[in-house]
Amino acid sequence: MNEFIQSLPKVELHLHIEGTLEPELMLKLAKRNGIKIPFNSVEEIRDAYNFQDLQSFLDIYFQGADVLIHEQDFFELTWAYLLRCKEDNVLHTEIFFDPQAHTERGVLFDTVLYGIHRALEKGRDELGISSKLIMCFLRHLDEESAFNTLLKAQSHKDKIIGVGLDSTEIGNPASKFERVFKQAIEQGFLTVAHAGEEGPAQNINEALNLLQITRIDHGVRCSEDASLVKQLIHERTPLTVCPLSNIKLKVFDCMEQHNIVLLLRQGVCVTINSDDPAYFGGYMTDNFLAVNDAHPMSKTEIAQFTFNAIEASFVSPSEQEKLR
Ligand code: ADE
Ligand code: ZN
Image (cartoon, rainbow, N blue to C red):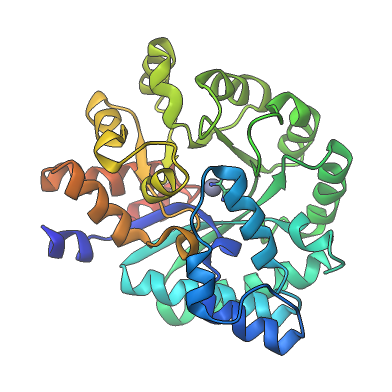
């Protein structure tokens, strides 16, 4: 079964490009850019990756992102991820980036975007991997900062397909960004949002109703509300689930307690994704393997995750046919 999983064509829909910064590249960029980080070796960095919850991870994640300064840094970061995609037979990937994590430090929006975009074009041409880019608003920052970020994306609609919402879920409700999402939709951006990762099922309802999103990032706490699960099944609202992330951030105590396979068998359009693979110890294949180890599945069930991801992706119907 492991060989089947390794060679299975995959589609990733929930991946923060800043979360693919491996310790080796972090050290290299820190040195190259003269940025002080509180680590001297790869081992020290990996030892620090013991998270109690989402916030303890985010603190380290934003600190890591500080080493990214130049367009070339964002290019190398993205290119390294695409090479891992190739190893895992990922054919298509929809990537988040957090512009505010960089513009807040004085790095220009265009520096970030052009570095990532250049690697994605090379990935398409040289590796045959298609991709879409989704710009996330940091929910711990205010509405004004999100509006400013949306403004910067105006002239890049050819490169950015949608907007999302990430960072600290608890204490930063969807309602804070209702007006920003309304404007983004009016401007033609597709919309997604993290909801029901650490926060309760009600946050998923709010994200669906207030932000008009077309897919939910994480959403695993939907199981606490039977009528919500029924609605997700009925409307085929996709959930981009990140199994290894959920264990590392203690959303579930262990993979045996994870609800992804139960949701799949209930008929929810669930997908498997890696979230921040450099921090959570696994890319796409690792996530599939970890789920199957804890919840042995048939080949048909495993392949259903890829079919769900194709259905949930932002590629056009004719492009979807090519992925099937
Ligand atoms: N940013 C990067 N990874 C995240 C996650 N798992 N939840 C919320 N924000 C994030
Ligand atoms: Zn995420």
